[in-house]
Image (cartoon, rainbow, N blue to C red):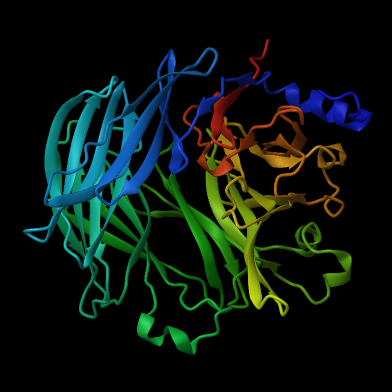
Length: 512
């Protein structure tokens, strides 16, 4: 820690570090240039597992499983488990899962002679040795596929739907597999309504409960050009709830009169109810003016339905005073996550994101330079009780601007402990000196210059603390979007600099 850090920052660090342990810093290891880290997939008592995807060509790809020793987070093993297809075939890995020291890999495999796309399932042991392989489905050209793991890791569901317009009726095929790849369900459900395009956005299910599929009924692409690009073209969502035992489909249409839905998240609660929540607006533009929630019981009854517009006190946290008269909705905010706590209350987490392109023409050289600016800015946090009542909304100021990098090191990740959440992102050391309710004096972090990996602690009463995880001397930049949570007590953070990577971890301090 540098000696120039102010007294205010020292206080903030002490407040935050009172809840989190000192980070464990792993050793640096080399990464291939084209390698794309995809996230942490699991852990056991000694080892942390991650997966990296390397695309070389259509005929050659790798799926690299890495093992880190949890005590010091040093890399101990690395192995490619993906076998490139034989002559006459090409394919790619789709999804990989970890459970009880086993790896489960779904891939597609295209037969160029038969013009058929197969979906394959492979089971590996902890050392990457293949134990079982099978073809579990085929995928026609006019269908799309989603693969989702059961809530308690007791198998998988493969869901297929029409990819293109179907003006007669829409249907979804459900195929459930157990943890060994054995098929336990193979059925098709049809919507009672005549629909056009259908886009599956979310899936949730328990082994002995309904399979929930959140669908967005998209517009007709042929007529898209007649709409203003700033306007939301379609806000019609529906929830398909399929009971495999009763062979029964119940469809819930999700809409609000004179309001436009702008993002929905879905998750099962500890009571096995289904929670849907998100944002709405009243202008039809891609803005946010309030929040809504819907809670459905496992017997497919509506337990709660709520919506609430933000009042002027909430909007004042996001809109500067000079703009409050003309700005009535929050612009560019996107819904990212829902974090359900042990008592079934929950947080909605969103972020202000936008991109713009800057072009400069030099008449002397006749060359136009194009710069893409990626902006991942303030985080919006909304807290709801277990019945879906909106309790409060607050803003976590953050300004991340990068150019021509697709926001590689931007955005945030979070740890849900069951009673509170911690947000992690790159920030500047100066911003960590400001008060928690100082919404408009934060400075931007441009191209990650003088960054500091930071965290924000939030409980059900509001924002509690903000401060750095490691000092500014750390050169490894957080890749927040790929640093996913895999346990309730530890947060693993992937960081990179150049062609080297390093894993950090932070734990909750145990209470005396």
